Image 1 (cartoon, helix red, strand yellow):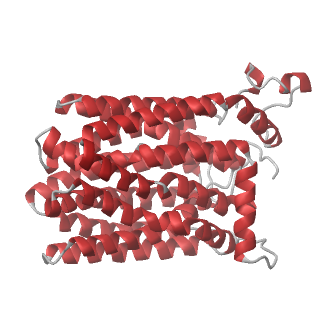
Image 2 (cartoon, helix red, strand yellow; image 1 turned 120 degrees about the vertical axis):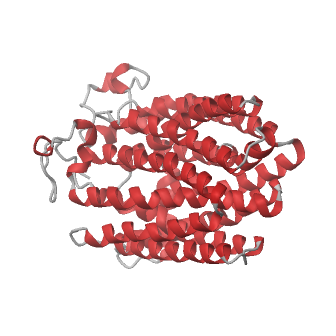
Image 3 (cartoon, one colour; image 1 turned 180 degrees about the vertical axis):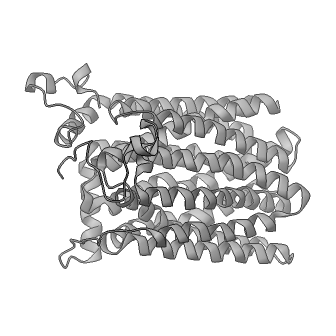
Length: 451
């Protein structure tokens, strides 16, 4: 995998000077990425509206923290089970076709949810079934989407910027979507949130179809799916940087991320509010996450991101512990800002490093394991969080989750020396770091060895 020159001008791109874009937004000079940015910006607002509406609908129907966790489990366990196989498929077939199919099926799922809710026929069983269906879709969509990034941002020098912009887009939607959902639920019901989400998928499907892409080449050379599955597992297991990042995020996904499924309980029982309170809390997470993503957009290099990953875990954990202690809406919103900031620092930095390190032929499979760590562990976490909240209360559950994230960050810090040592040859080959004399290379904790 040869490094590309930072001055490389890819097809479909225009110069930064001619478009007036600053260095921070350089990935938008690629036409395909601009199309993706436009389509996804619309669709993701609908996605976040559905997430909030689903949580509130389950809570309104059942008043049960255990069922909130169960619905989260049903929506995410298919991703855990299917993601490795999906990664092999993504490495075998046209990734744009994968994404067109996943977005179309997701649109159908949202419109079905809207119809059942608006006609007042919705039951908890139907929510569980449709959530599981969305989990199957996500098993293919997430590795497909992550692997497709390199096709939209043809110049590898702009890849980290594209990932950071994508995170900014997700979190701008996280800011807008929950707030809109909270207001819409307060004046109508959850069904209109699902309907808007279903319609919003048209934008991203259209953007995918409008892209101009060169044909993809696939190198499985007659290998069976099981053989390719094993190749992906060995590749991940033998790479200390990739393995360590995935282990940390499996822990955070298991213990930290499930705080989201408990948010309706905090809004209604701890803070004594309603759907608008839930929208404000989710919006605060979005503001913090957006600020975090924008701070990474302005970075000119992936160097130094290994320090950002554990820092993000610490900030995320501290925010959760404080949120569990808070009984004030305004303080809770400030802590959600902090939580969102730390959460996104770790997520975006880890994604950027993985996308930089991975061999192209393994991209789909590695990103499928990222999907397992990032989303696939969450169903177990949702179930665990629901059961813990039922037993010890939501505030204590969130505090335990925060402590676990802090411990995970400390463990990652203990691995930084060997991780940087293993990353350095790849960064040198890609031209990210200059080659140094071997004596300097053997000092992984020194200034020159920083990754």
